[in-house]
Image (cartoon, rainbow, N blue to C red):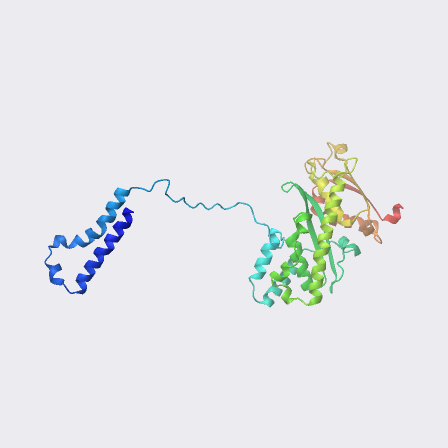
Length: 329
């Protein structure tokens, strides 16, 4: 109440002095001593200053609570269920207004896609309903941080634009769990602006690619889990056997009907190369797969070496028995 009175009084005094100026009463103001020229300002602000001292700080009962903004550290779920990488790709494409530039980016991604192993170019990995020939496959690897299997895809196409779409999906989905991959809504291709530059046939092919990758992710994850729970040891996905685990997961690309991998490193203790990678040096592999149909023994071994990739450089010896289902029937 007191503060309001001070404001009213200050306004009244301001009106009086403005009125004196308006009536050209300069003579009356000029007669005031110089030291008193500050009087109007003193009169205007003194009540406010005095009110501040008299009133003092507001009581806790009448004081307004301060506004505290709490920002959650949790990441909101993506509206289209996209992975972190796929969301980043979508946003990047969305910022490009020119359809030709988007197509050029897809062609660039096609050129950056690593070549696929010939062993993966089998009918089971062919994507149906595509104008171009498309192969997609993957492997499941246990991730210590996520405490789950993550899927890593490989792919190939004989059409450059289609290959760019394959590369986009591989980059956006690899390293994620099967559950996360299957949450992805295909509408993201429209949000990214890519769908506008695709023919209806190529758009349907893209949808088929995504559907096949979702299905494969579930199959690879299920196979890895069943292998981990198999009697007699099976696949030790959570143990301290990086070479063993890596070989088992890599060989899944062959879609084996039978896969037995034995670690014989303890039988070669003290021999040259026995240390291998953390003690894993000598392995014995028995694998049965349709992939070996029509291949010679040497060619079958080369396929396995290509599938294992860098792992072969980290072990000392691998004994292989690779057969087709007909050969073991």
